[in-house]
Amino acid sequence: MLGALKDYKQLPASLLYLIVAQYGVAIAHTSFITYLPLFAKLVGYSDSEYALFTSYRWIGPLLFSFLLAIYIKGRRILPLIKIAYLTVPISAFLVLVGYQSNNETLIITCNIINGLAYGMTQVMVIPYIYRNTPKEKRIMATTLFIMAFPISNVFANAFVSTFNFINPHLFNELNLLVSMTCISLLLALLIFKTDKQEQVPVKPSNKNQLLDYDWPAIRIALIPHMFFLLGVGLIIPFIALFFANTFNMSTSTYALLAFLSSSLVATFSIFAPKIKSTIGFKKAIPGTQIIAIIALIIMASTEHYSHLPIAVVIASGFFIIRQPFMFLAIPMTTDLTMNYLGEKNREMGTGLQTLIASAMGYCSALLFAFLRNNNISYSNIFYLTSILYVFALIGYKVLYHRYSKQQKY
Image 1 (spheres, rainbow, N blue to C red):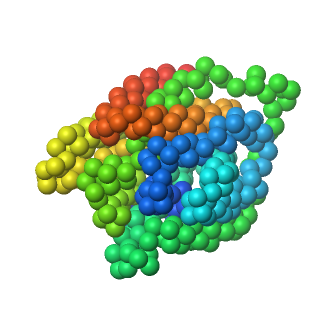
Image 2: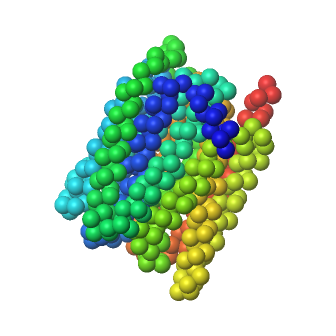
């Protein structure tokens, strides 16, 4: 493991500052995904109401990701990244103010702003990395960027489980979320130490920039992403509610469970570049995803016998198993997608990925709200998620074969 970590030291210091700042942004993002639904429940909002508020987070990226992707092609990205990094924690704090004061207008408005700012980071950071990192080091930089989600989860869950256990009244859900938002803002300020001169590609000479892209290639690359993200949207934002409502699990207990899972995710993710170089995309992506899908099905099935003491043990165990295998494939699918798209299509690829993520997040939040409002069980929702993951896996298999043919010519 130490050998794998040493490889990451080869990355430029300026890029590492950007990635640490991304980890700060991710702390606000992941802590809200995990603990905001529990806080919303405490202040009186139902599952369906929370899901509806969450759906607004996807509107900003849905409307602007495509335009942003066109705008940044041939232009500097870093100034916009700085604005987005500061906006995420500030707007997250205002979302908390909205829930605490039952101000639905503030909740909706700041969810839109928060989603737009976070979506901007997803559109811009990967192209920035690929512009300013040597080809042989790109998967390492991409892995570090993607590890922001699990590592920030490790931190957030350790923070919550420790302090909530020490004093659950002082360190309640609201105070913990406020604390993590402040930490997020402090780390995000490190983006101002990223002062490296950007490598900016030549701006397209064609007046109609849309003609500069290989649209069939982009379509092939985005189809599996769409299925994967629709599945993610049905489970990740609402998994805490599954454990709270099915097993009456406390916040501190769930935080400990999520901490263990996130620690494994972070540990596994470190080895993504090594796994890719050892066994390649062809075996690594389907192998990890099949294990994750099976674990999800077993976890979901525990709702059928939740009255038995063993059910919560099985659900917890397979939740911990599922998470690292699901996330392990993400750096590899990202690298596969970016390599397949090439320099000409990367900005548009990440822009449309973020747009699709927003569309799928919005649709899945509304779908989750509709299903729960009609008393559809968590297990059936998670079975549906498993089917979506299978379609995504088939799509990545097609993408790999297209990429392999592309490399031969």
